[in-house]
Structure formats: structure tokens, C-alpha cells
Image (cartoon, rainbow, N blue to C red; front, side):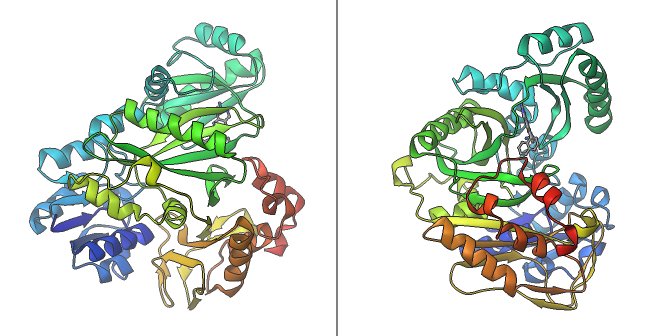
Length: 452
Ligand code: MV4
């Protein structure tokens, strides 16, 4: 592989440039008119502008990206996360143009993108799933019968959804009838696919996901889990590895289930198996993400494996150089997502110019970011501007280091979520490893926001 087009922006585009440089592979950045000043554009070997600021006219335009790929004669396209990363048609178009899509086959994206088919596929492979409807439910009568059978509360999810989009909870027959129709309408509007399925609603679960690597020769391994329970409205704020909740025995069982799920999808490249885990330690597959994820650095820091490099090597046809028994979790890592948002104003986006910037460093600190002093954050995209990762021998060390690093971080000119993170890192519930998916809401309810 000699040259890769990076079909993304921001920190992940930079992360891919860095992996390519270490592998001796040339990079082509594509960028929108709003990203001319961007670090990924400045650091890539070549750059081509693909359109106006709006994602729909630039980073989401498969035709323009493939044209750029052909003009620059690249061997492969790395889609990063978001944008076209889980678009089966884009993966398919790349393959038909003889450009390697750095990710799974379009058939795996399609299979896992249909959340009902994904569940059915992994269930047949022996992976536990949340009790629920057998595939999509069509009529209200059928749906109501299913909800009664499962028992309330139930959750209604869009077949084409994922990541928390298009979900409704119902506590009884009356609210179910209403929520069923609302869910179908929303799914039709958001995804052009109104099909929904039903599951028993697990109260206050932990969100624990397993990182998978699969090569093109059929070998699948897992690199342990990430606990992503600290979320607000389905946006993750903090991720860590290993999970403070898992025992070695449960980790082993879930890891085996994750590998089975990936094998059932004939998966290739890096992927993530998401589980919900209840208080009793029951775990349930909910969905698979067929891309590199934002939080991949915590896995890199606990295993020592460069996931983006592995993605490229797998796409080049190389065999994984490890067996499962070679993988060990050597330390603890935590990531804070730093967003350009105002936590005191209900997390309103806070784009603008960073007039002073100083990033933390020192032992056990990693910052993945595309921003710098003088950079103007455009208002058109995701508000994440940096990932601060700390790691050490123990969870305690990683937490102390995070609190120290957050205290050093200077970002002036815009509002960020740094003060919120500082408050969480002194909160006993979080520090004792007791956070579930309801944690952030509970924390915000008892914490005056003028502290941020
Ligand atoms: C659930 C659930 C409870 N029961 N499914 C949210 C993201 C999407 N991947 C699935 N999600 C959930 N599915 C059942 N059957 C609760 C959630 C959920 C959640 C999951 C992970 C992290 C944060 C969450 C916050 C609210 C709800």
C-alpha cells in the first residue's frame, strides 16, 4: 500500500495521517471549504478540496471523494468514524473502483447495520441477546402481544437505528400503543425505514464494548473491553479500560461471545461488539459498530497495539501477528472527550477561535487533537475538539493523572467540557467505579452547573 485517502476531518484524520507516516504510506487529505486551516490538511502529503462546509456537500459526498481518489491514484480509503464509515454503498463503490476500503466488507456493514438481523445472526451463533421480538414487528396488534409477552418496561428500537437514535421506552399497554407509532414515524423520517423491534428494557445497565480485530484469513481476536457507561444523551463523555465492573471470569465469557459475534458476521478489520450488562452480571449483545471508534486509544494504551496501523495492515492482506493468548491488559487507561460546549448552558455548542491553547503532557498522558492556538472551530461539525487519555498501573493512578492533566489544560476563547470532567474526577460515585448509564444525569441533577 503506497497512498491512502483519508475521508474524514478533525482528530481522527490526524490520527490516520500519523499511522500512515509511521508505516511509510503517503496520505491524501480531502477537506471542505471550512477546513482549509485544518491540521490534517497541513500535515498530509497532498490535499484536495471536495466542497462547501456542510458535511452533506463534502465529507458525505461519495462521488467527490472517489473522484479525488482516482485523480490522486490512491490504493485505499480510510473512512475514520462517522460520515461514510458505516455506509455500505460507499464501501461497495470503493471496491468496484478497485480502491481498498479500510474496513469490513460491505456485506458485513449491511448485516450489522440492520440491528434486527444482527441480533438474529449472533443469537444463532450462541451469543446472548436481550429478550424481545423475533425481528421487526409489523402491526400494532402483533407489537402489543410481543410487549405483553416480554413484560414491561420495554424499549422500541429502529431496525436502521443504533447508537441510541430512534429509541422509545414504554411502561404499559397505553403508553406502548403511543410510543410504537411515534417510534415508527421517527424511524421512517430519520432513516427512510420505519421498521422497529422490541426488547425488554434493562434498567440502568452498564455499556461495555469489546474491541475486535479480524484479518482477511479468518482469524478473529479481541483486545478486551471498554466501559462507556459515562454518557449523556447517548454521547459518551468518558471511556475506560479495563471496566471496573468486570471480573476476570465475566471478561473471559464476554470476550469469547464477542469473537463469536464477529465470526458470525464473517467480519474483517477492526470492529466493536456492544453489550449491556446488568447489576447481576448478565450481559446481552445489542449491536456491532463496524468502524474504528472515537474511544480506540484506551484500548491502544492498555494493550500496546496501534489499532489504526492494524487496520491498514489487515486491509493490505497481512495476517494478525498475535493469537488471543498473546494479548494482555497491562494497565488502566481513561479517556475524556473534550467538547466545545457550554455545560452551564445545557451543553450548547461553543464554536469560535481558540486564542490561547496549552495541552497537558508528562508521564502517562496522551492528547489526540487537531486544534491549536489561533485555530477557529467551525460550527458545522461535531463539537469534540480533543481526547485526553491518561494511563497508569492502576485505575487510581489513571484517575489522579487525569485530574492533574485536566488542571493543566488551557483552552481560552471558547467554552469546553473540561470543568465538568474535573468535577466528575473528584466525584466518589465515579471514582469508586460505580457509574452506570444513568450516572451523568444523576450527577448533573445534584451538582450546581455554575461550578462549570
Ligand atoms: C437498551 C437499554 C436498555 N434496555 N436496550 C442506548 C444506545 C444503544 N446502543 C442502546 N441503548 C440502550 N439500549 C435495552 N433493551 C438502554 C440503552 C441506553 C444506554 C445504553 C448504553 C449507554 C447509555 C445508555 C443510555 C440510555 C439508554
